[in-house]
Amino acid sequence: MKLIHVAVGVIVNADGKILIAKRPLSAHQGGLWEFPGGKVDAEETVENALRRELYEELAIHVESSSPLIQIRHHYPDKSVLLDVYKITQFSGEPVGNEGQPIQWVDADNLKNFEFPAANQPIISAINLPQKYLITGSYNSHADFVSRLTLALSHHIRLVQLRIENFSMLLHGEYIESAINLIARENAQLVLNCSVDEFHHVKEMYPGKNIGLHLNRHQARLLNNRPVDKQILFGVSCHDADEILHAQKIGSDYLSLSPVLPTLSHVDVQPMGWQQFAALVELANIPVYALGGVNDEHIAIAQSNGGQGVAGISAWW
Image (cartoon, rainbow, N blue to C red; front, side, top):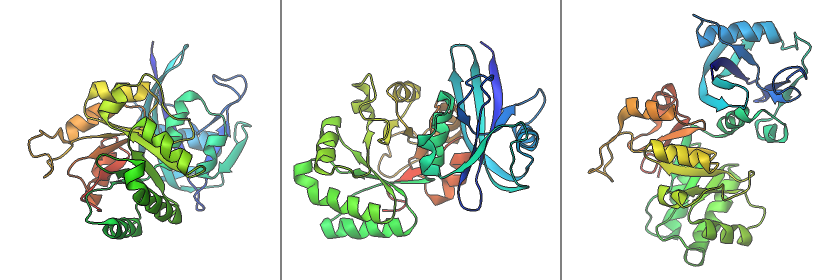
């Protein structure tokens, strides 16, 4: 089936709201909301296609854009390659030039609108930050709280609580401290633990915004998504097969490692940025580069298709 190349714009205004438009009933996936854009013509760059389409559809001039995510999706009747760019500077006031309804929406409210299936990873990418902290070693509960507080002060907004031999009974005070500190900064907490242990924590803290992250061994045992759609779910991956399986079980994002040499895994051969980029092409969900990376590598990770970087020592 021929792959239709589409340029897509995630347009962000000064208030941080996202512009969405409703597809006409006569169109493919008609009646659903979408992020504006259109087909890339032969011999046309994605950036030029985006400028042309957004001017035709919305009467705006794109002034600044950067890659957000690339998605390949196969519908029963067609296959699409979505090249998605985030647009933070534009001139003109958006209007529905083709009669389509448009609406500015808060990023965390996008989940309440009905989008085509291919657009769902875009929503994940919009709501996920560039930096992803994985907690490391600590000397005491007080030291743990101090390290996490400092990390959050450096604009970390996604935290994976990873504790060796994690147990609700043994590590309850760490979970409670993490929940409280992270909620105070309006950040997202995910637990690196078994599915059973995760559900135990959710029972203890009903209504709290807690996600789940599985390592590759835990993920391999699953055939379906282990948590509700409203719960953020991630998987650690190291190769193509693990990436494909993570998507099969409904992961919202994944971490891919090791990208660069690390002191913690000196015996493991890093994949490097070229291999990272090749593997990211298999992922239709946001990907974090992990292993030997820090703030200085965010732009490099994104230029190679990643969401950003994940790490322990960089911020812990």
